[in-house]
Amino acid sequence: MTEEARIRSAITQVAADWYAAHRVGQPSDADRAAFLAWLKASPLHMEEYLGVAALDRSMAAATQETGLSKETLIELARADLGAIPLDHGATAHRQPPPSRPPEVRPWRPALAAAGIAILASGAGFLAWRSSDHATPVDVRTYRTGHGEQSARPLADGSMLRMNTDTLVTVRFSPLERTIELDHGQVAIHVVHDERRALHVRAGSTDTVAIGTDFDVYRRTDSTLITVVSGQVSVSVDSPVPPQRLAQVPAKPPSKRRVGAAQQLEVVADVPAPEPRPADLRETTAWLERKVVFEERPLAAVAEEFNRYNDIVFAIDDPTLRNLKISGNFDAADIASFAAFLGSLGGVHVERLPASFRVSRVRTKPTTVPQRS
Image 1 (spheres, rainbow, N blue to C red):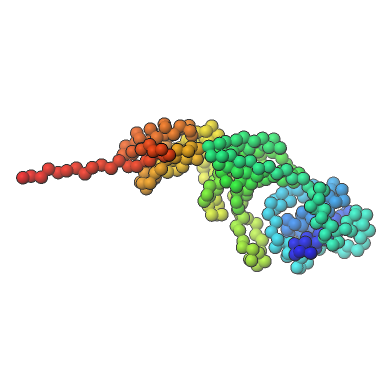
Image 2: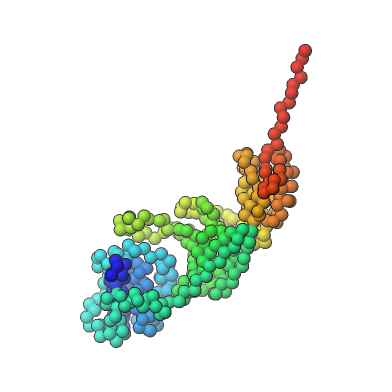
């Protein structure tokens, strides 16, 4: 067996022992606390316990007898199933779990009755996990090209809107709702589901929403999350080199709460200390194919127009790039924007075949007449 298979086999056996214990009798408060601690120690523990219950076709009984509701179990799973580092499982394999279930020998008949004996080697369960009995996951990929936008109704009734040059992968199952944003910008109206929060992952940044409207823009060097209504929780998983996984203890990522009319920027996997007020008019203008800007640098505004059009604005002069401007334009109306720039004092706009070249007007030095 591979190392991963051995790890899963060890965890599966412990999960089966816990499951059998819950089937035989009502656990004590101490046992229930020990089980909950074991369950929270690793996402793999949750995954294997749910798998054992599903194999027995008795998920409802399993959750009832643990003293935890199915919604509680699913909520715990939903918090961590998105990232399952191998080190968590390896730790459980190399040393005893934090809280082993009580002595299990009296419950072995229950294991057999439940059909869980095939899990002893781990191989049977691994085969089951890859079969048609595994939890169904609906995976869909959507993309928009340069200048394109798209609206996609999701299976739960939520609405996903995609801006230009965007690629997302949507994963829905009975346990999770996840949207992976590879690049680009999305606006999401989230329908509340008490069983499943909705996660939007943009690299290491995870934005969790219960029922809200928010925008996520993944740039090359940063990710910007803006909340229109409701609130979201934003966390960042700092990547750990594989060779250091065994030495680095797992720490929960820090979280930021972002409320309505606020936005949070994440740069180089580091979130801002606090969210800042958001100009929702600017943030949501793209939904109407507009570019709205208030006292923003010319370079940033030009970049917005360049996202939608093949004819781009090129600005080399540093002073002009930092020039603060305000306006409201259709995203495709580059002629009007070029005329607006040309009307600014000291700005020259030259139309080239594939671009508008924006430069400063160079004033000729005044010649002082020489006295004879």
